[in-house]
Image 1 (cartoon, rainbow, N blue to C red):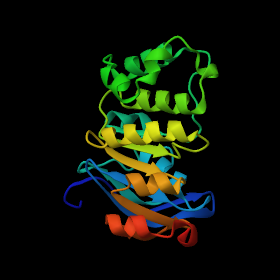
Image 2: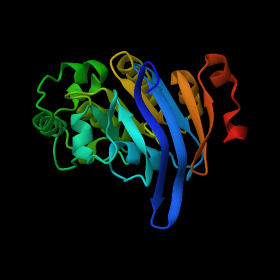
Image 3: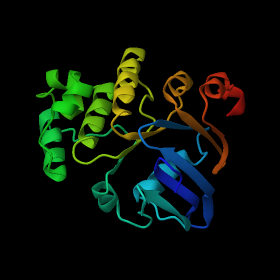
Length: 230
């Protein structure tokens, strides 16, 4: 485990049946930092997050969280260790209100203090009685993140959080990520290149299931010609 690493992935290989989609992926995510993973569709980014979170079983390799190996644990066991995964589908319980969605998460996480949720996502206070089916994409993303930070959260994996959202909502999310990074480790898969540049303390580039580049300095991140390199 690298010094200061909250999460480390070592030589991970993942396959769907006979088709391998992740090849010897090794990544290190420092504590209290924002790590961004970029790459074209099909590069293996979502597969990587799902394997870390326990939704996919690696063929080989390991995942180490805070010094403890969590490879092979079920998703609910990974959550109990303090690692949360937010998928890109932006799905919430559509027949339940925002309050009821949060109450379910509170029950599951045994954390009924919503002060941090409303501090990062104050708009949710105004939406407490609105059902999930009537939330915008940005509001659903805020609710998903609010649910995820209840309970013990050391590492937060977020897949395509700004996809399809209005610029004003994207900026609200960027502000929330910056605040969250002081309290937990963030790992984002992000296709919005401006957001990636603004948030990333380090950046990994993936192509065809492989990690092909790692940038950990601001100058390199800001000057990277993403469109060409992707």
